[in-house]
Length: 227
Ligand code: F6R
Image 1 (cartoon, rainbow, N blue to C red):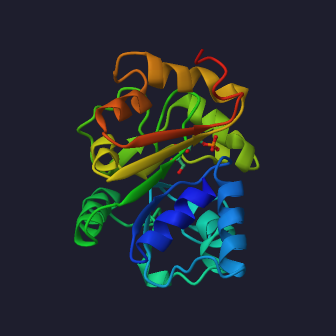
Image 2: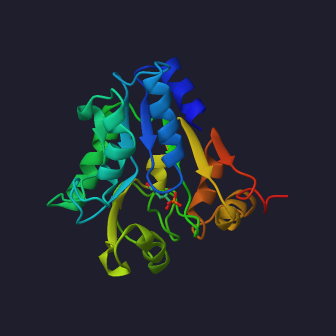
């Protein structure tokens, strides 16, 4: 995954990247940092937009996605901080901020390469089951299952925010190219349902079949229900 992203940045040094957080991409970001340190890639003219952020957490909160991106990637590469966009969890008017975020993506010329993870329930970004392919960046409520899964990053489940700002499925489908990364047996069912079931709101990642250039990058365990 890191090699694919590095190759894309080298092919287009002013690429607009869409980035994800979570447990899955940490090794990808570590490999990208390594490639930067050994001079294989530079990010001076790159712009990035993250998929989502918890509402109520400022960018300095250790569990905020902004903080994650700083510590996993941005602080270790030469990207211009002004060109790194993560929805602001502390925005005073999250609905207005969501609309502004869409406008910022459009002003940057749209996303060239979007990196995604996948939730156990088939969510992409924080588009939970029930999300239509026309959804845009907006405020959403997290499902109890997502809150429970993400509790591993917090001191207790009660500390996990219940709402988030997320790019919509429609926003994601407008990216020119999409890479979805999934690892481990516990993602196998979501991967199978995304790729094998008819597209529906039950499995938000299944809407990716409407996109002409999507690659699922899977380890054997995540791919184990496909054959
Ligand atoms: C993160 C995001 C989420 C995660 C998904 C998988 O920005 O948008 O959709 O990709 O919840 O999370 P992990 O990788 O922690 O299993």
